[in-house]
Length: 383
Image 1 (cartoon, rainbow, N blue to C red):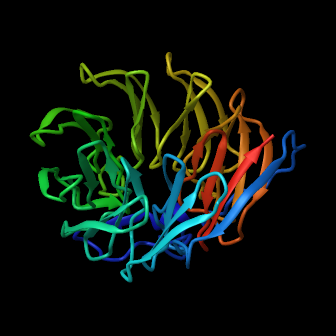
Image 2 (image 1 turned 90 degrees about the vertical axis):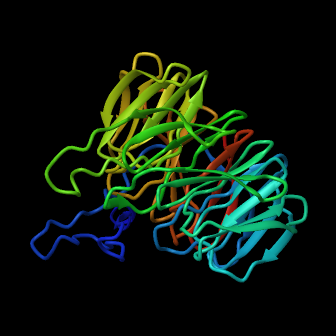
């Protein structure tokens, strides 16, 4: 199961712990919930579908499509990067980097970024895929790079955040944080605003970084480690923070969902919930895919739980996204589940690809873009 693939160590073990029941023969096997029956209220349609090489693969990964304007970008694990027209699915360009890629595609401000297994970041033109610059960061970059008009920012698995000049590739600054001995596999992806970068770390800290100096403006602890063992004390922030109406929302594994006023570095409210996924918002709610794969909606203002959908537990679901009046997640069998934003009941289900979907989905203009593990990129609508 994907949630078990995620547990890895830094400097303690080199391999990812994989497979159900990995604690030993006496451990109880974790089984995914079976699909429940329901009367579909809406219909899912495929607007277009395209192939993205060999795809991300079936091991845990953070590959997801990225959108910049009218283009959508995706890559496979073998180093092929693609640009498509977002509305028609027409392939605009394809670049063969011929190096293994470990992180998802980042896109913005006319640029596309990927990262190699060897700790190299490569920045391409979103127009034609031509290489603009590359730099060695000496660490894995498992999450997508982020951009503003001046910077390309990457969060590394060793706890660093590195910013480069968007045009020249010159290193502007490095922010370094301490990494616990035991962490989840992967990292959060930062929010890069014009003057500040918001980044969450495996220590459970949320940090606002000055985009000129690279120093911390403030830091706030989202979760405190608890328990005796290193496993119990993991509080990684692996999901991308969410900035909505001047409020910052962030979750942590075995920790909390918190709302932070980013101007005062003040926690406005907090709810105990465990998640390593990015968040979604809509209908006045914040949506969370919990670490046990239940989906929960919290009221943005009061923090009260609005509803909780537990029928997807242990199905290795993706982060939630909102489309029209629904919230959607994908699972390890390639099903996409659509729930009502109002009360969480199922309204539709669509099987995209039996290879499964581990990477997060993207929504733009009420179109859902999904990249399967085998490399099928599809644009879906729901009516």
